[in-house]
Amino acid sequence: MKPGQAGEAMPTGPDAGAAACGPVSAAMAALLRRVSIEDGPIGALSERLDASALAAAARIDALSAQSRAALPLAGMPVVVKDLIDTPPASCCGGLSLLEGWRPNVPAEAVRRLQAAGAVVIGVGHTDNAGFGVRTAQVRHPRWPGLTVGGSSGGSAAAVAAGWVPAALGTDTGGSIRIPAACCGVVGFKPTWGRVPAAGVRTLVASLDHVGPIAADVATARRIQAVLDPEGVPPADASPHAAPQARRWGQLRIGVARTLVAASEHRVSAAVERVLERLRAAGAEVVPVDLPGDPLLEQVHETVFCHEAALAWAAVLREPRDLAQLPALVSSTLLAGAAVPVESYRRAMAARADMRARVDRLLDSVDLLLSPTLPVLAPAADARQVRVRGKDFGFTGLLIRNTRLFNHTGHPVLALPLPSAAGADRPQPSLQIAAGTGRDAWLLDTGAGLEALFAGVPGSRGGPSAA
Image (tube, rainbow, N blue to C red; front, side, top):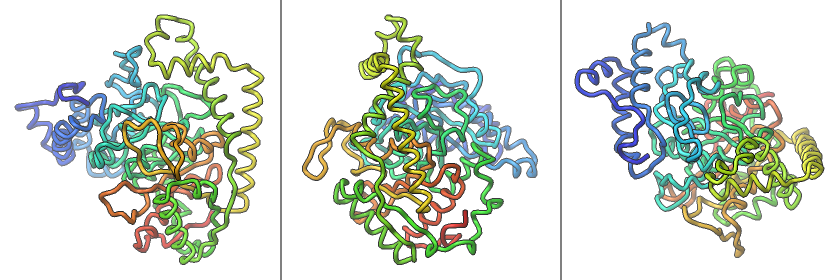
């Protein structure tokens, strides 16, 4: 966010001293001072929440040690995408039409985080209403000039900048995984429906997911355990975390070879290095064919546009409101309103077939691997991106590998990979999918993969039993 656009004033003078009297408050005050300086050139936050963050920190400091220990996220600073209701912030989703909207009640996902002790320090910029994968108002904190991705770009940038260990995003065609990949952090799209969408602005009801962006898999798992306590128990209570239960030699991994081959060389080479390491650890790696274009593209366009038009039907009925929307948003909604119902039904039938096909694949393998993106993070202002001598549109290329799992609803993890070029260059990202409802297993296995890729023995030593 721009300097001077904080939604709340940070206490000064005697109030500042009182707010910083406890350890959580002191750490929070120092963090907020840092963010107030660093977010000027980055612009990750649409609004800072300094006063409410300090108040929340003070409440945690006032707890007994026993009560504080009972909070799984006690004092953890987080950022929330501004499509998600987060009082007292303005949550307009990047739209002038919704400017000034300040919800009184938090989204259920935000309520769960706060009840667990997380402290929301601000809301993160998004593409207009989530229609896009660029978040153009945010400058990349690590590699200026490159895109942070979207539409949860502000959330991913806040994690990549090191302000927060985790942030909340939404994912309709890849909008958690794409910015995670562009920013070199972890993104997790849960099984569809596992995290409540109450209080989240609907984009496409059957594709929308809520989940974490985090600095590492362990942190993503901590967040997901709060968002979905039934599906992801705490790590120390998870039956999947036992190191002796299963080793890499018992893992069968399906690799989407077509997607690897269609990626730029630096991405495909990084994936091949990972596969070599997995084979060396004893895993069986087999090629698989995922449902793809042109059918996937047609299904995605039909379902996305039609359901978005339904979600925004009230705006479509008001010409003055429609005129306030950016051209991309209004044109998508108008196109969706023109989709015949029979075309939508055919697309949904084809989607059901694709889901069944992926389910069958996951009956024969434990994981499905592909690049999260076919390229490293492109230039922030790119309209076309060249891959293997051919130009592709920015948005279509970035959602190419991610959108399938929004339609099938399977849990997916985006995991940054070591880059041969070194830490000063963008990292490739690996997309890892598992069976429906296997969110905890996927996160536990992802933590093992993270350690394996880094060349460090993992605490779990390998994947765990289902």
